Image (tube, rainbow, N blue to C red; front, side):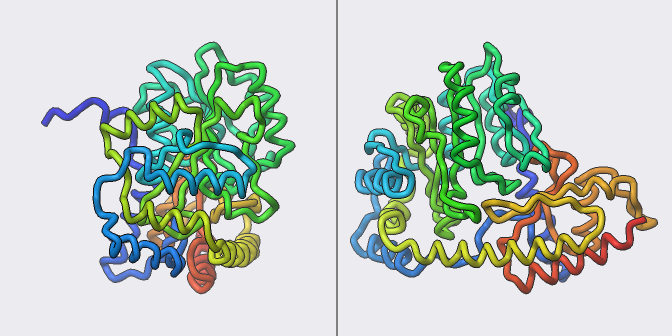
Length: 396
């Protein structure tokens, strides 16, 4: 069967692949603890669910405007002003079926064949693949655990060429948990000021899950705002992964381009979700903050458990709900049956021996590392890391 060549440009997300393998082992009766997927293990807050039920009763059941209902886009503008002191109008906003679609819209609207997109490593697995779908060229800039997994102004400057179209990053970062401070963003902004042709996509989906201070957006710099596309959504901060709502804030020209693309792919996103999102964005944030407090407790416990394991180097995440340890000291070691040659081997060994799922670092552009989530119960976190410790002790 001859399928489209577009399928050869990109790979299946490793995050989904590892979750699938975990489910297969679970179906065989094994007790697999999932530390691979990036999904809060909390239920959507009650007041948001009630808003959705009311929307159904009020018959919000018809096609929606492509960029989203006006009241939703107004609510998103209110959120930006309240949380980020950023002024946007509804025409700057496009709501989509998840932040992944928001990213796809923005990348396809900006990147032409052969144009370069700078992405600091480690990065979320889908960034590079969306660029490949657009026939752009991914330019990886490698950061390190020692630098807190953050790109430096010098690295950024050296990566920019005449073909650079876009810089794409996240803060808080999936998978590293790095959070850029205002001072660090200002230093990057100084570089961007020298290159006014370069667009910036700032993925801020983990905005609320921040353990080190207030969230800072690179869009706060007035002279960069017009060429910055902010990506956000409801999945992480409101435990609404299955509701599928993301959004962008961008200059009107980019927003209209994203709307045009979306009009051919999916049209407007789910009507009930949109009405629930208005309530989520404009009312009580205490359930979200309580969730973040619990993530903070899990982060502390996870770091304690990881520090008990020899040969693992681990950056303490400043945001999101992952750790991204360097496990390269285990390369070349064996339990007599399995030899660990790379991070994929490490993840598969942990899955098959400890029955704990993770995601290999190659998927994120850093082959010495592995991502583990702490978006699971404290009981499961403690049980999982006890198993990992025992499994790694068998490697010699």
